[in-house]
Amino acid sequence: MSRLLLLIVIAAVIYLLIRFYRKDKHQQDKNLAEDMVRCAHCGVHLPKSESIQAGGRFFCGAEHRDAHRE
Image (tube, rainbow, N blue to C red; front, side, top):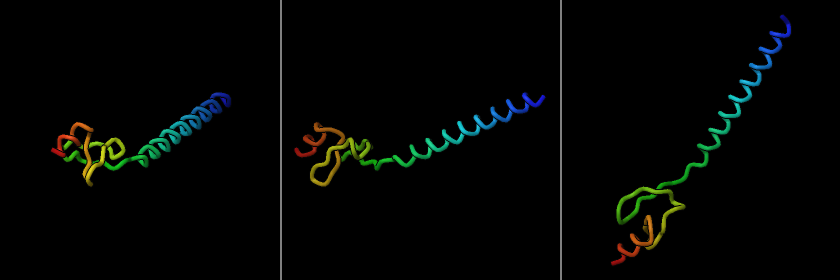
């Protein structure tokens, strides 16, 4: 009977550790959020790191940057 109780306690501890690890990892992913910008030509929203900046405006690609210049 004591072995069964010991196995249940060990399983509960492992479950709680896994649950805590997943929760901590999820919170770290939230901290990695990035600013979104809007393409001045087509209006698509995209992460700032993926955009092209020209003339103080953001674009989703070189084609839209060039088309906006004309």
